Image (tube, rainbow, N blue to C red; front, side, top):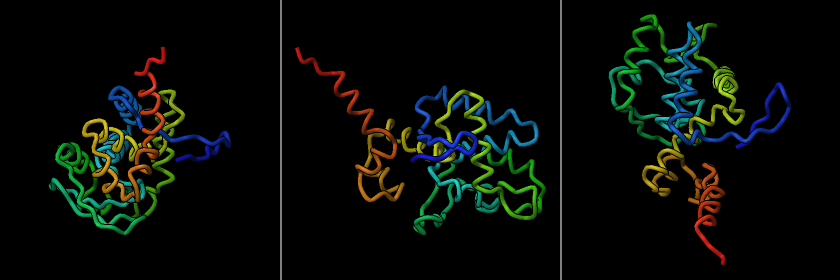
Amino acid sequence: MANYTKKKGMLIDVQPLRTKSEVHEILEALGMSKEFGLRNQLLFKLGISTGLRCGDLVALKVEQLKGKSSFKIREGKTQKERTVYLNNLMADIADYIETLPSDVEYLFPSRKGNGHITTTQAYRIITKAGEMIGNASVGTHTMRKTFGYTYYQATKDVATLMEIFNHSSQKTTMRYLGLTDESIENSLKKISFF
């Protein structure tokens, strides 16, 4: 998935983070904001752990997640219902919720009014962290792609991943994650022609 950057006007190809060290670098960069570091890190952790689209992430409500190991969501783009599992993030979510005022409705509240941060603001946060670590292929879709890439590398189960992403074919899922080119390159490396 390609996006145009506002500053440079050039097309960028948003990619997944393929190593744990890349993930840790982004999380460290996201945490550098004294006021919003915890929020920014949780947004990214939720994104790479659930595969939800940015629009669905920013619209999450405190009550959907508070004290829960899973919840159901109707995805904004597809309108399909999905169960999201939070087991490995429950402590992070609880710690973050403790920092919020008790009357806040949204997990990622906006400073302007009673709504949540916008997808544009989330994009700014994540691309700035990408710039800080020298990675120009980072955007909000990096979270979803990182989830998919990590899931696929751990399970090699493209059929289930296709279902999670609501893609129409396994080929679409492989291309979405950049796995088609990677697998072709890796398979060619293994062949000796003479």
